[in-house]
Image (cartoon, rainbow, N blue to C red; front, side, top):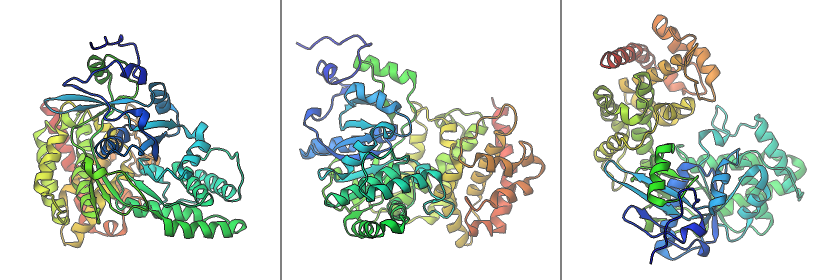
Amino acid sequence: MTASLPPVSARLSLDTLAGLSATPGLALPRLDPASVSIGIVHFGIGAFHRAHQAVFTEDAMALSGESGWGILGVTGRTEAVAQQLQPQDCLYGVLEKGVDDTQLRIVSAVRDVAWPGRDSEKIIDIVARPSTHIATLTITEKGYLRGPDGDLDLALPVVQQDLGLLERELGGETGLPASTSPLGLLVRGLARRFRQGGKPFTVLPCDNLVDNGTITHRLVTSLVAAVGDDHSRERDELLAWLAASVTFPSTMVDRIAPATTEADRQLEGNLLGLRDEALVVAEPFKQWVIEDRFAGPRPRWEAAGAILTADVAPYERAKLRILNATHSMLAYLGALCGHATIAQAMTDPVLIDLARRIIDEDILPTLATPDGMDLSIYRDSVLERFGNPNLPHTTRQVAMDGSLKLPNRILGTVQDRLQQGQTPAGLALTVAAWITYIASTIGEGGAVLDDPLADLLQAAVGHASTVHTDPNGVVDRVLALGQIFPPAVQASAEFRQAVVDELATVQTIVRASFAHV
């Protein structure tokens, strides 16, 4: 006889899980949480990780019978995620919302969660533990603490603080204050691992950065190399160990995981009969491409559908240029046209046509086809996924941090097309839409510009009306921002003129959109 469900006020936990049974719309954990031990530390345990890497990891453990790959999740600056997960014994639901079907699965791969403000020593100790083999990261572009040149920004106060703590760690001090960045915590963990015997280790970044493994390797070694000469022996020995025993494979990740809404929580409550404060929402599609270059043991992620390859770059480039670039274009133009979500933007025939044209004319000519992929089919699947009405990914959410996203998503393609002797009009339109979006945030009544360079960008644009009255001046000031635009793009008179011209096109599209409302 099946136990009756507790009232919905009861919270998901190991105790309440015991009273549940699987149904056509509800999948329970694929393995016994009590049998899982920690083998992975994940920095940045937000919604995306819980909907992506954690799901792949649970499936890999279930299919392989290897239960030593549980995850310690490290939160960001606040302990909000820890407060969501800890009372639930780190269980949470993933609500997979397709166009015609919704499925809920409970995931148990995360076995502990730590907040750096309180648990810094615990995190460092678990990174150093011999049974831990991998650190994964989803810390967003901002979390890598890079300067305009792409290297570690040693002038940042947070980097200086982490450097001082690393020097004290190498000196053998104990009871140190918390590190203030994921990078600082990771490097202190690696330093302690080295001092305790130095078993090989793999650092696996999962953020949308081109060649993210190489970038992370460079940042980690830069922080260690900055250690002062008072600890030169320890510094040099750690650098040698990093070179010999730690690998940094590149990865490409893909799954749309929009913010969870109250309607999502109500839907989960109806399916589960329990309250889940850590619910995440995702589309059914998921993809993970991993460079097969591990220093030691790893989960059998390929059994769960991940692609292990010698070269991630073609997959990474295709995803960043097709999916992420088009996502940004739809976000900027969609927001300007009054569309609250990406799915709403995909009901606009003008924006759909623009998205397809940009991919076909500007992006596909720059791509090599990855093994096993048809880029035309991938294009169609991306646009279909964007149109899923059950994924309310807001245009403003996707539009944030444009100064960090444009170089990875758009400007590399611009450079390639310029080298091919072509001026990419669709990508010039995307840059013009971004500039116009910035202008829309200036002045009374404007939305907040969520970008680390917000003040600089708004100063470059000037006033909300300047895109109409002085388009040449606006484009010149924005393109002069070397933190964003590479020299080859800045030097192209043809691309500059295309952006100026496309500012007017953006206005035409926006006016036409509101005329049909």
